[in-house]
Image (cartoon, rainbow, N blue to C red; front, side, top):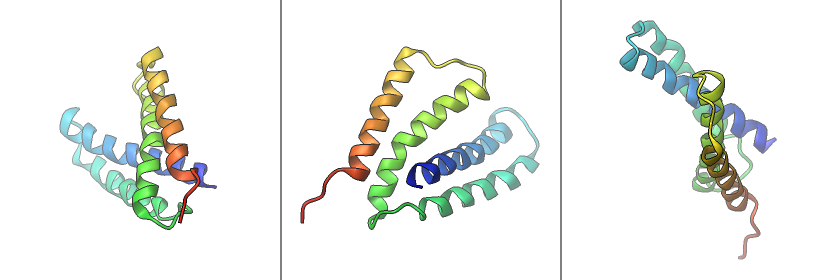
Length: 107
């Protein structure tokens, strides 16, 4: 369930941020802001659904998923295929996220 929540949160955040990008950088209508804001609210809500006691740990681990989701957005929406360095960096980030979230805890 955690992986699904992180993936959904990542795409909600990316969609929300892209709405602002489209408005400010691509000259799109301010109407893009309403769904962007709703998407960012969904993102924040979804992060509260992660199974961990500490918000900071949930947010830190989420960062790795966000990076990989951003690379998927780059490819699928913007049409720029990630190169091998993007893929390698994304893989490293996912490993780091897994260590942060599921690593054994002492005390």
